[in-house]
Length: 535
Image (cartoon, rainbow, N blue to C red; front, side, top):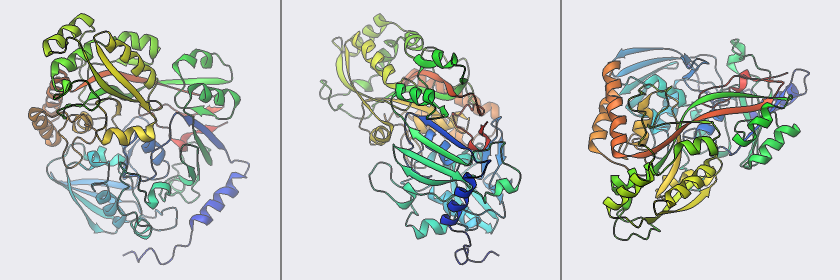
């Protein structure tokens, strides 16, 4: 049995950083500088389920399982698993792994981390859904008990990263930071993972520096990934023109989200290259279908968005082809559903849009009793998705044609997401990637009635339909793949019928970089840092 790992921590964070600093001055040391529009919201790995943050966290904190380049599941801090019965999964853990402060990784950390992700202040309930409890079998074995059969449990575990139990206790961070408040814990600005890199500094919205972890277990196991980066410098740059200028001047080596308007110029620059790929992320609008009266609207005593005819009118008033051509400049694939084609459960049958028609939209509004239109609050991020603000501005103009005056307000990511999670937007934009590559992740998060176990964690319009809830409960536990996919298709068709949301498009993501940078494009829009090579 392991002795208390707190007694002899022979390697301190300071010593590790010193080692990394020395390594940086080595001939082989390479710095990789990159930028995108926004910063991550927190370093607390169970606080805010944010795609950019999850991708960055994965370089420092590791999970039991993760995806390889083909998005096949591979063990990371786990070495194997066995389904003992339909509701009990046994996971064997990797030995010889240490956290960056020298503490040994063991089963206590796994039980603590998975239980921490299940707390009320965690935004990772969608990944812990169905888990009843986690039990330590021995120092390197744990059992996960589920409330019923769970066909996607291993995929859920890819986003549940491991935190050192004693580090969290010592630093009063046993519970995740509540992202809806301004209160902070130690884990919000500090990190202690088992991964290939360590957090050296983070000045939120200004600069982040990661350095190589010289004692990473993976390097010893020959899992370097082919990269040579020993220091990573990330700079959030909100303005598109400034991001591109930083790349052109050599201030950064790569930008994650170049403006569509600049792509032709970037592709034509002999010093640069652009990698393109379809992301498994769908952009859509959600609508408040809960309040009896919308704040800031000129309609008093009732909520127009509760009427499916109004929601459908807003949908049909959007000229999606014009947005694709003029705003997105081809970096979008129009969609009629809430999941992208790479996600299990997608079918052509459900990916059909209501046709664009101003006349049909006006008629629907008239039938609903709003022939003169109405005023409504409309919130969008301005530094999260490709041309998010520009898209919302264009839609505002399109809705004006049918008499709907959308009062658009745009906010940066760091304040936008907490705001919509407090239910403070009447109509809002959201982009939803699917880390599990299974439709349940989207259905449970977006259209399940808000409840416990992560249900409806991003259903911030509070759409609710008992028929939908029943379908999702069946999808959670159905192990026959054909039956399960039939249920998913029914749920997506119901979402379309109810106009639970207004789907827009799936993003096509271009990455722009210097010619001397080698990396591969991932459908989840994440950079695998240990495979980046600076030539």
